[in-house]
Length: 561
Image (cartoon, rainbow, N blue to C red; front, side, top):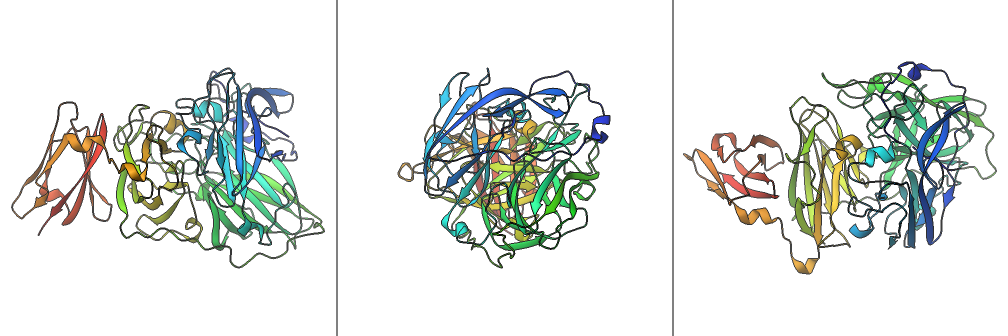
């Protein structure tokens, strides 16, 4: 079974679609592809989401979505992407640790009719990853019409565990997608007023599962909205993996929030439920305020299903299989973050202009520019990133080419299900903050950058994205050329000093200044400023991040008592 979705259509969106009753159909399970050479064709197609109506779509190797790619850690694989879209595209291997030249970012375009063939060794741990187009300005257009698929990586550690692993029987891939359909039941290339949810391309579908422990691989493949997953009867399930690997131990839950691009693997014990029907639901009313799909802040556009609870799919529980898994292991793996001692710090501010805007977003005061590298770093360097969200909505923040560990959320230790390997993290709204640690391992490229961005695709396409170069260890770290063209004085602030002066060479004038205290908390933001009042700074170390049209620089100043 293959899949697909996208194209600009006049917006005439009937709200009745949200409540329209559709006969339940069996949820289709994508085919699999494995081996050392894998061929993918990205193509246009059609699919009947509604009986008798052909909806225009995009898919890999078919009409909608794509096959699940099965990889093994240590395997050398070549992925041949054949572009038959009649448009330029890319394909990003989301979550995989690959070199920038193989990443499928906006810097790896594939022209219509051409084939791109990245080849690499699979370095990742067992987990659920995914793939999708990533052409700047067209990511939403191509993904929202169906261009996406899952990647399952297996490794010896996970294979040795007694976990459900029979694909399509007790190990089930589930791609959840919010969609906007117009009155002709065509997919609209937007995401503000989504009025339907698809599961593997099926509306109001049914899964037939055996009465045993089953594994559900969940992907929020939506362009915009969040899910708060759970069962109608509050059945407890166990999360065993986050984006990029197993957790230390299964985490008992009745609700699980996933932002766009996030994945999770859960185990559900159906052993005593043969003959039952279970409703797996979206609990939109329980999402925090400012999380798209739940209650939005003032001014946030809402769709007909936002801030509501509704069924996503029905699970019909049948007889167990002959080799049923009936127990859930008490422990899984050991996640060890890199030491924080000696790590460099980097700060990112998510902002909107005007401040209440729900559509016009910036990272560190800047919009994405293909020709601008926001910072340089080097292989082997460990960094702590502090991401502060000054906007009215939550943003799922994704970093390419590597995983990270979440150190804190709003200053607190993250919950157990966020302590594994991640590549997307949700940054809460209204001055919410996330602190994470990462290490630049294995790959460097002086010319092709990695990306970081909000994974709400309309935000990414309109510039809520940045990029960085990883240099080789031998070349040394060039933090940013802007550092050579800006000056901050004084850097030691004795009592009695009133201001810090900022000067710049011609063409390097500050666009925005952000000041963070030594704990990474944002103290102030100024635009087009050349001085900072000392009384607005914290005692001790302050980081002054200066954004210019040509790059970014960070200076340290110390305020003594």
